[in-house]
Image (tube, one colour):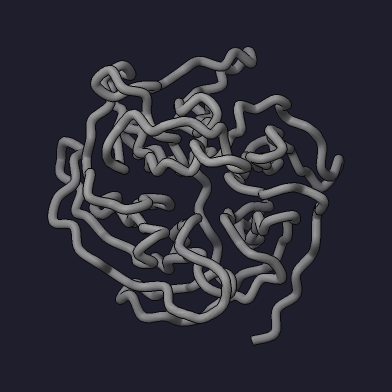
Length: 280
């Protein structure tokens, strides 16, 4: 299908981590190599939100509307308080520094889930340095920020993640293996029964990275050529072909039918027939 893309900003190094604030009506997004977090609104366009940003990548909001950010340069997850203070949420696992928290979601019970591949330890995307952990895992942070819980450790490059609408399942993609896995979420927040749910196939540039679900349980995941759209039964419905290599996206605007896309050097907006969901 023919689709129109509106370019909202360009000239960035590599964009990531878009998140829409439903009350303030603005979008935040990261430029990891630029060490720069930016803000877009219809009134002001693109402005600086935070620079330096510790080479921020993924962002979301907790249930109190506080910004949660994955930082490549520091290998930590931080929370931005209402007064602007940046507070570390988690930095280490069993005495070793995390690889580089990448993408992040917050469950309705307040649990914070994040993926931890080593991309932030590579030149350009982060700060080149050796890896302390010998695995690439998925973690949960509950009531004790100093004790993150390792949920899964058999990923190659865990990246995007999102909950089903009822939070009974957690979808996690693997960039290197080019597939999406789904896990059942136990009552205590842990994961079980992981299995491959779908693959992102194609010969164009792109791989699983950003991933989200809309209000009708349609799952969107970046992949070859742009954004792959899967039905609840894992059937591929569409590939949204984006003008540039696409890392991530989120819904926003008043009706949550605008898809904001972070695609390499640019920020785009296009419209979808169904709405996404606010994060808080």
